[in-house]
Image 1: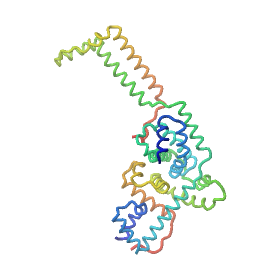
Image 2: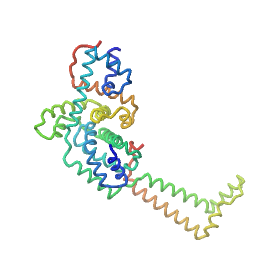
Image 3: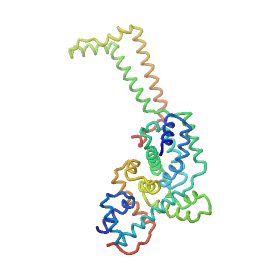
Image 4: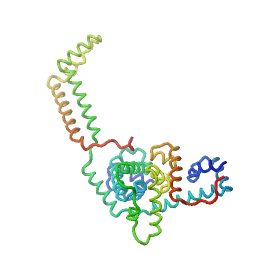
Length: 170
Length: 180
C-alpha cells in the first residue's frame, strides 16, 4: 500500500471505522513507514487536544436555571401548533361547503344534473334531512358554520406565532 | 443510557416537568459543549443551548424510540447551532471569547490550549466543526454521526478527513521525514 492511500484512510483508521482487511494493511504499513506513523500520531495528538480543550469549556453560571425557567414558562403558556389549526379550518370549510352544496337549491340542482348525466338513481341528498328533520338539518348547518368560523378565527389569530416545522422532525 | 434514563424520558414525554428538569440537569453540559464547539462564542452557545432544550421540550412527544434520545438531542443541538451561525452577522471569534469561558487564573495551560483549539476550529466550516466536536468529544460512531447530521456515512468520513487535514495545518505541527 502506498503512502497516499494510507493518508487518505488515516482519519477513518484513527476512528476504527475501516473494513478489517483495509485496517490490517494500514497497521502493517505504519509499522515500517515512519512518515505515515508520524502523521497518524499527529492526528491522535490533535484529537486528544480537541477533546481536552472542549471538555474544559466552563459552563456559564446560572444557565440551567435560565433554561428551566424558560421551560416552566412554556409549560404554563403552551404554544399552539398553527398547522393543526389551519388543517382544522380547511377541513371545516370543506365540510361546510359539502353540506351547503348538498342542501342549497343550487346544490340540489347540481346533484340533479349529475344524477341525470351520470344516470344514478339514488337520492343521497334527501336522506339526511329525512333522518334529522328540518330543525336537525338546520342545526347541523349552524354547528358546521360556527365550527368553521371559530377555527378560522383561531388560525388567523395564531398565525403570527406559528413556526415552520423543525428539520429534525422531518 | 440505562433503564432509569429511559424512564425519565418516558415521564418527560408524559408532561412530567420534574423529569424534564432532571433531563436538563443531566444533559446541560452535553448540549452546551456541542453547540459551543460549533458556534465558538459563549453568548451564542448559551442562547443556542436554551433554544435546544425548548425545542426538545416542544418535540419530545414526537420521539418514538426513546433509546435514541441522546442522538436525537444532539441532532437538535447541532441544527440549532448551525442555524445560529448562519443567522449571526458577527466577526469571527476572538481569543477573548475563549478567555471569557475559563473559570480562573490558575488554569493558564488549559487556556493556552483552548486558545489554540479555538483558533484552529474557527478556520473550519461550521459543518466541519460539528462533525469534529461530535466525534472527538462524544465519540459517536460514523453511523450515529450520519443520523445526527442527516448526511450519508461517506460524507461523514469525508468531512472528518478534511476537517482533520485543516486542523493539522492550522496547528502546524511539524512532521519529520517524508512520505514514500
